[in-house]
Amino acid sequence: MMKRIALLTTVAALAFGPGSLSSALAEDATQVPPPATTDTAPSVPTDSVGSVTAEAPVTPPPSEAVIPAQRANEVRAETLIGATVFSPEGDKVGTVKDILFDTNGKATGLVLSVGGIMGLGAKSVGLTWDEVDVQPEPKLLQIKYSEDQLEAAPAFKTQEAQQAEADAARMQSQQPATPVTPAPATTE
Figure 1: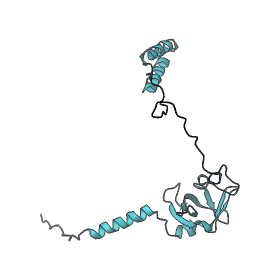
Figure 2 (figure 1 turned 45 degrees about the horizontal axis):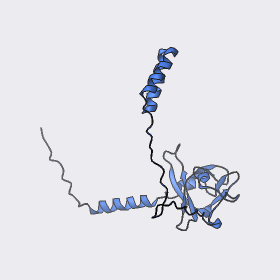
Figure 3 (figure 1 turned 90 degrees about the vertical axis):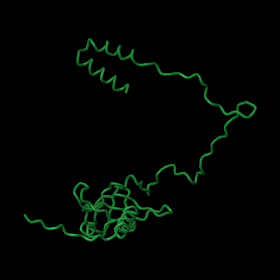
């Protein structure tokens, strides 16, 4: 709120001329209350007698659990998602939409966005990781299929989409069939 007031005051001051800028700023400064101060001291751990106790030093994870830097043969997910995928002929066939992992954390596949214009009308197609040739330099992803082949492949469905379809089918099958009665004919 204070930023808005300061911005509006500055705009008004500039609109009325440079002479009124200093008075507008002075007015704004008088309207701003000073920040509240507290006299409470920070909390310090004490034992039951009231003396100060030292905190135990924090130990980091073991060195074999920490990755301090990316290796030359590793590719980050951020680099892959949104990357262009090419056919062996060098034609663009799609872009990486998502990466699939199993419960052990191993990458099992990619979901590509294929076809469409600027993302509209695009189709999601899943491919196993074995079908993708990832080259970290020059950040090239290549598959052995054409865009037409990918467009002919079945669409990829997430667990959520599969569940929604199953729920919709279950709801439809549980609805009682209501007979459709034609409206009575009217004669004028």
